[in-house]
Length: 253
Image (cartoon, rainbow, N blue to C red):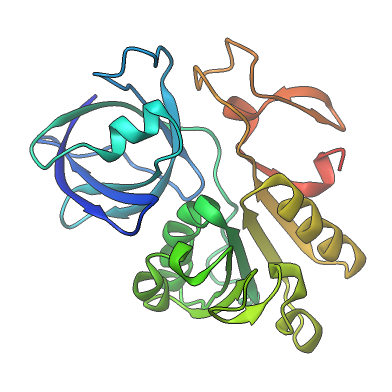
């Protein structure tokens, strides 16, 4: 569907927040799903780009995408201006699990690194709507790479790590002291694969349920091109179709 750019806001040197809307109602979306975005005006970009659904504002009929400008395609997306059109196929994939209504409220930890923080805002907002107070543990190389912190704080506690110590605790997310001081019932993570593997290892060692949103290259989003295959306990699976969110017990990490 063709969506109109309602706002394009540069967050820092790397990230741009796109707020997209439509004349018709947007389809229902769940946290963890993604969009396949067509990149027009970039001669070297032939394939759509997968972008996590960052947030859904139902009242404004907006879907937010957080774009990291790292290549020709994403730099073109980051250059979009208000009023321009963007063709998106959405929502795609399977999302994070949600606690059953009426069940005992689990203590939730949402761990993100880099642009992997994107799907966690939507997830945290839905958990908050269900009466939960998730803890966000967000990591980056430096303070300048952190973004949308005020939005995250609307829905839960925000803890930070930076590799250079300019914000929060110094080190990686798995070095944060909260992991030694508190116990969590469920962890959700998204970010660089080594980070997610470390989070999964921590969860496994402490008997905590854990889901990871994988960031494999996804060209079609429909399971046809087979470029996003991940080795699992059930064989090779397409991340775009069977994921991108997996229980880490299914992954051969």
